[in-house]
Length: 414
Image (cartoon, rainbow, N blue to C red; front, side, top):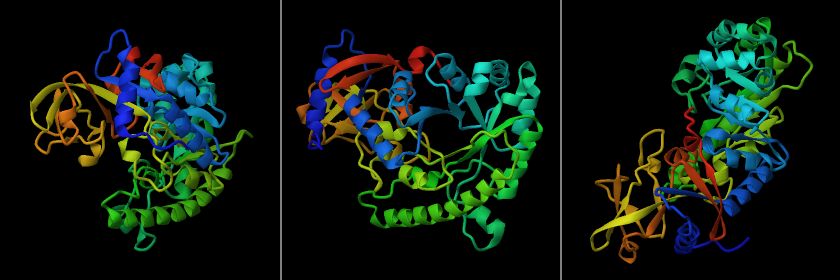
């Protein structure tokens, strides 16, 4: 493996790459294809032969989705809305799309039911009889017997002592599905089958394992606690998955294989090791945003950067850049702020943070920057960065090799 590139060298390389663009509009977003491809290889290595489904919310660039899917080992897209899934199928980007979040979009449901191609390509997550009621109400335009649903099962950790009441209060993990016990899952599965729907499979997302860094500098004790909780979560979940799998296997089927989707970029290997899991999901691991820097399970290779220019020099040791205030979603905290990354030696101020239309930066690198120089940032999350640009410039080495639209650039809002 080549030696890590210094941040100063990275800033110089990306600057050279975009300098030749005929119309350099900022903020400018670039994706380093060498890092993207290396990250894709790492995800496949960790998956150990289990297919990897690409999470579109973490890319939001059709060309990057297609690039990942062209690699043997990646199969299918995990979409975040039904309208997005229908668009991906209609455009030929994917022919196997799992919508990983329930929908109440009646218009999209009616379009799905009326489109034979979409019915065969798209599966929709459900976790409540009310979701099935909506399918009943909107499927009149098509053949409901070929609508595919996936049961989303809660994968959070709960203490095994103290009963359900204590467990509900001490839940650790995403608050997603009300389905937890095997009989609850089987009951909804039977309901779906009784309505003439096709039961495609099961999904379990253990966000408390996949989405929490566990080797954070300066947080040794907290990281140790997180690692212990991850170990406990995986052990409990392996037992729970097996019980749910047994209950689902007892349901009548159409003879076809049922999928079991699990995991995320932070626990690909652990999810793939569970014998009931047939595929793992990953997306952030392709771009490696700031929140994915400190995991024991993989080496971070950042691939996506945002460039904004220096527009002011308020005084010694301070520069001001245009924009920069792209804060990530989630529980509000310092880890949601974008990272001024290259050149190294810049930091946000405590008073202003990442600003709305301009951002002051301090630090030893500030005095070496002139007005017009680009400062390169990393977003805390992967796909959210792409909501701030119409196009992404794909860089190989020190050259832009292609420029492709984001969802935003295509006028798509999901």
